[in-house]
Amino acid sequence: MSSNEWVRLEVADGVGLVTMDRQPVNALSRDMRRELVATFDAISEREDIRCAVLTGAGSVFCAGADLKDRPSADVAGDFLEHNRITRETGNAIRECAKPVIAAINGAALGAGFGLAAACDILYASENATVGMPEINVGLAGGASMLKTLFGRSTLRRMFFTGQRLSAHDLLKRNVIEDVLSEKDLLPFTMSLAREIASKAPLAIAYAKRAANMVDVMPQRDAYRFEQEFTMALSKTEDAREARMAFLEKRAPVFKGR
Image 1 (tube, one colour):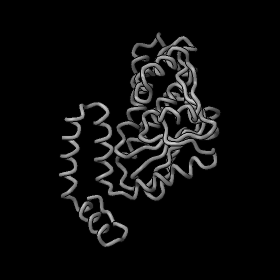
Image 2 (spheres, one colour):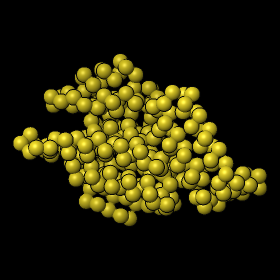
Image 3 (cartoon, rainbow, N blue to C red):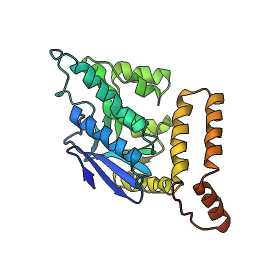
Image 4 (cartoon, rainbow, N blue to C red):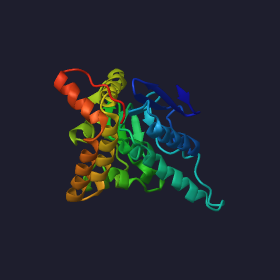
């Protein structure tokens, strides 16, 4: 296990479990954001990690930005530096070379909900709630995160009111995969992560890139790039091993090449 002050990384069976642990509510300070960025950058490069799970310690996923750690208008460049690390926290998850599963184990608010929205696959516990409450403290931010998950009307209602949605609200809107009990959330998401980690690592890396591309590219162009990925993958040792293992009815042994 590797550990920063506020972010833990535990690795087993090809899965990296990332736990935000800044009690009592895992609020994001600048230092904690830097630890998250460094952690997911490391996950991108580590060959022993093929999938990641992001969760929070205790009964809160992440309550958002630490309002006691705001930038100072009296320090030139402080707001710009703060905003840059804020952006890059989510980007480090979104751009991570490995799939990231969100195990939302409680409230995920503001920037905390943004972290969950940056993940590839989302599950939540029965006690989970999400929202963008910035409007309640005289701020506005996060519409770009909401847009990745909700339609126009829901986005604006949540953004203008700070209203929270329950885990079951999210499931009803097909935003998350399922609602699980608090005790089952982490075991289930870790099991799914191990399943993903068992796939050919090069194929998973290309699949993550393709999934990110289809979010922002026209379908025709995105599918063309996917076809090029498939053509490149077909020439790898892992692709041949996957085909042979299927035909021989055995578990594949991948080498990442």
